[in-house]
Length: 107
Length: 107
DNA sequence: ATTAAATTTAAGATTTATTTTAATGAATGC
DNA sequence: GCATTCATTAAAATAAATCTTAAATTTAAT
Image (tube, rainbow over all chains, first blue to last red):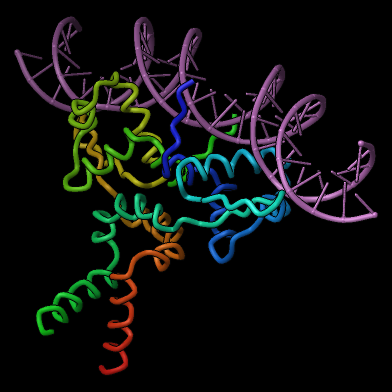
């Protein structure tokens, strides 16, 4: 069995995306995270493992609890991929870019 | 069999990401796209179908050829998802946001 | 009309992912 | 120590995704 385990594979699953949004604002224990879903705990545990393996989450053990907190930095892999496309749709972004360029040339 | 077929599922596959980047700059026929990969043509055809179903690509028939062109707009689904995370890592983006706010209040 | 070219559709095999129940491990509290 | 709590790992079933060969479809060219 040849597993993928990259960021794109990780965010392909809707439950995992929900976990990421949940943990974005504050680190949570596995139990607290699992409480938000209907699936069995080992299922959530597996999702957490996948998210940790691709470095979107980081574990921090505290006694018998394990807190999961986000590593937003890693999301840059996705941002980098969509970047070339962004310029094809996001006017606001392009405007910001133009202003930024102007700003930098003046300072 | 309950297939997913959303943008996140679509970009989870490395071949499909390569196809998107390839077609980003110019529309290409199925054959021209397939020429870039080692896999059999029906395989590429299937990937194109998946990308079309989730609206990342659009088909335009021209005689017996089918041109595939990008619908960058749809990539916004992904952009929207990573947005909350972006603010946790992208200093440049935050700076641009600040400047933009300032710019708007002056005009 | 035939043949050739560009692509897709079908069918089926293989590989990967996901989920569940049951079992295991490790820290806490009485 | 012993039971309880928080969480993971193992094993196995189910579901989904991917890839290939062969057949079909549609348009173009001779």
